[in-house]
Structures are given as C-alpha cells and as structure tokens.
Amino acid sequence: MTQFKLGHAAENEWQKAADQVIQQIGACEECNLAFLYVTDAFSNELSKLLRYLKEQTGIAHWVGSIGNGICCTNTEYYDQPAIVVLACQFPQEQFRIFDMAQEEQQAPPPANPNDFSLRPAVVHGDPRNGHLPETIQELPEQLGNGYLIGGLTSSENHYFQVADDLTEGSLSGVIFEDIPMVTGLSQGCTPITGPRKLTACDHHMAITIDDRPALEVFKEDIGEVLARDIDRAAGYIFAAFPVQGSDTGDYLVRNVIGFDPDNNLLAIGEHMSPDTPIMFCRRDGKSAIEDMQRMLADVKKRLKGAEPKGGLYISCLGRGRHLFGENSEEMKMISEVFGDIPLVGFYANGEIAGQRLYGYTGVLTLFL
Image (cartoon, rainbow, N blue to C red; front, side):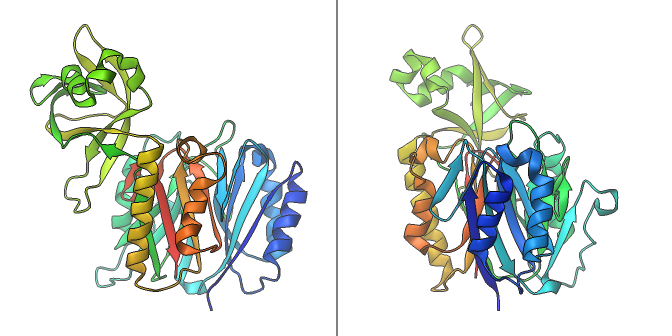
C-alpha cells in the first residue's frame, strides 16, 4: 500500500528541526524513499542532517536539494533555517536512485526497445553545469519512455543535491517505473502577441524580427506606454520561444537583459538561432494566478476522479511570494483544489519538465 507522510519545521538548530520532522512523520517502517529539501541556512549541516534522518527513520533512500526557499502543504519557507520531508512507500523494484556525477552512473541502463513502461524521473541539477540542458534533453530518450520532473538547486553558498548521499556537479534523482502520477506545468506568463520570427541574431543579441529591427518590434508589441520608458519593461516583459511540435501552446520564457537603442538591438538571456519563432509575454501576479488556476484545473480533470495521495511542487525563485503574496498563497492554491495532501518542494534556479529546462514556471507532480 503506497503511503506518504509529511514533516516540516523551522528551527535555528538542525537537530531540533529534524526531531520535529521525525515526530510529525511518526512510525514509517514501510517507507523506503524520502524527498528532502532544506533552506540555505542548513547547507553546512546537510551531511549531518541527512545521516541523522536516515538513522532515526530507517528510510534507506533519499533524494532532494538545497533551496533559497522551500515549500510544503500550505507553507512556504524563506529567509530562515527550515526542513521539509515527504516520506514515501513505493514498491522497491519500481524506483532507483541515480547520480550522474558518479563515474559509474554516467548514464542509466539502455532502454529495452520492446519495453514500453513509463519511466518518469524526479531530478535535481547543479546550475553551474553548462551541459545540463543537453543532459536534460537526452536523458528521457536514454531511459526509454522517460519524463523528467525537477529543478536546479538555488543557493547563496553551496549547491548540494541529495541522492542517497550528498552530491553536486551534475544531475541526480530517482527514476520510477510504472508509478501512477499526473504532472502539470504553469508558466505564470501571458503572451502579448502571437509568434513572430527571429530572422537575424548573434548569440544573445536579437538583430531583426520579421526582417525588421528587433527593438522596434519589441516596442511595438509592448505598447506605447512602456515603449516611452523602456526600462520599466525590465522584470515585467519577457521573451518567449514557442516549443515547436507542442500541442499545448508550450513555450520557454527567457529574460530580456538589455537594449541598444542606437542600433535597435535587443539582448535576451538565451543563446538564439535565426529562423526560430519568438514572442513577448508579460509576467505579473494576475497572469500568474490565472495560469496557476488553469494548470490546477487541467490536472484535476486528468485525474478523472482519482484522489492524489501525495505530491511534489517545484517552482521558480521568481514566483512564490514575489507573484502570489507573502502568506504562502502559491501553496494554498494547490490545497484549494486537491485538499491538504502531503506535498513538498523547493524554489528552483530553473525548472525541469519533460526534456526542457524552463524559467518562471511551477511544476506539479501528484502521486496516485
């Protein structure tokens, strides 16, 4: 019988926080996997904390990450020492911990072409590794019918992930096989116009869009008010790159990082290629709430009446209190739709869904 138990605490001393978590989880003899997220303040103690949790709970397998912010059912923790843990029970043969920073685990076993089992993986990555986008794109194919869910560690100091032991430098997590789950992705943005074509660019610099000066097109799309004071657009208007072949209108959101008015150029936080679709979108609290509600309704519909037993939620550092409000409003939105199910997660430096690394998104996973 699959089960999920939640424990969370905010304390200045790591052992006090751990003891509270252990008490909340209670007896968990059947639990064999736990998700652990801790705030930056406990990064130096994470090795001791992990060892203590293993000893006291008897749970053998752990995965997780450090986060500038972490979250759980109805609660978001920022700017304080805190821990969240989701203790789980899964069939032992249906999950496997992996760590691509270890030489012997550089790649998962090759997929059997005649095996059509779904292999989702919850993954955590080191944002300092420039090869992660390629790894994220390739891993689902290596798994065979794989799908990634996760995020990049966010931290002011260390960039540790947990994959049974502490690790860093690459991608790690847990691969599941035929575990029933439903996932959803919330972008938190609203497109201003339909897609255009990036007709000329140089690395991060957009030169022309639809064969017109890129900055001129940008000003036209964002409207006269913002165009008169273009610095106001920073942090509010973003570039979006539609995912070709997607039947859900999916797109990757990237920062607009600079302007060159003299040459009508636009700098974007993405290594761009010509002849790709591009559009601009706005990001604010209203857009974020509307898209979160859309995602939650879609996930609920796809559950087809099934009741989720537990879940994970990985959101962007720029979301949470910055978009939804200070009172853990983002997490409370999930409970309003699915009830107070045991759920944990963290605020990431980039979110992972499918084969792509996103920004400004929220990735929800519900276990059935």
